[in-house]
Image (cartoon, rainbow, N blue to C red; front, side, top):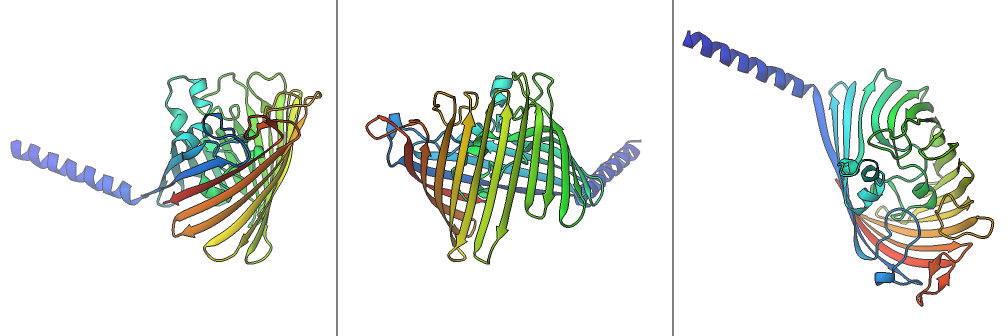
Length: 352
């Protein structure tokens, strides 16, 4: 009996090991991500304890500063039918990207989750995604490896960062695609705090994307509506031109903007890129620029010149930025109100 029992246990263990090995063979796992750091100084404004920065996301700390560590784990069946993604962020940039998580559920741990979703490739032309994923609106993204400029635009900073919900992507042909989804309140990553929902749609033709977002956001009496256009073209082997335009309205407040992204490759390793952005807001509900005239309007022209030098997977980005606003929203070196701010930074980014 002991011999029979031992034989059964060995057989059971071998069967379990074989099943585990078979399951492992049917799945693939990949690990990727990035690490970024930077140093920033104002050229026409105060530094140190009185340091100021444009009211945009990320790259707004003084002196030597940290960006974030980004670790992305992707798990997929070998046939590519189903999979999951866990995108983790650590550091100031990651905390800014997930800013609503600790407010919605104090003490929670989701402020390290940039994305967390599962997906099902229903067919060669249809994919369902369920969970939390970065927004489909806009030209720029949270990860610094996905942007040419290291600092971010006003349109990106005050548009949505992420959505939690379900979406369906349909590939109609090699050139046309459609996405439709329903989500929680914008940036409410962990759960829905007030049972209001937002719908989103994207129409894509080659490298041009027309995006729509509509739904009631928490605390607002009327629904938010945003329309966003993103496109980009290689005009030559060395010259690229991108464009982003957006309009957002919520209750009585609205913002709109447009940005051009010309980029020129001087060599295989070194490129120059300019972001020229005009951004305006109405009423006092947006708080993007920080100062208003008597009618509650304000605008800004922001010019950002960035160099990008690549050494294998390591990139150095020196950057000069000038923000000029319609109101005195900044301080000069003497701590007097000013309508412009010039700043300089250099960032170092490693991707793996």
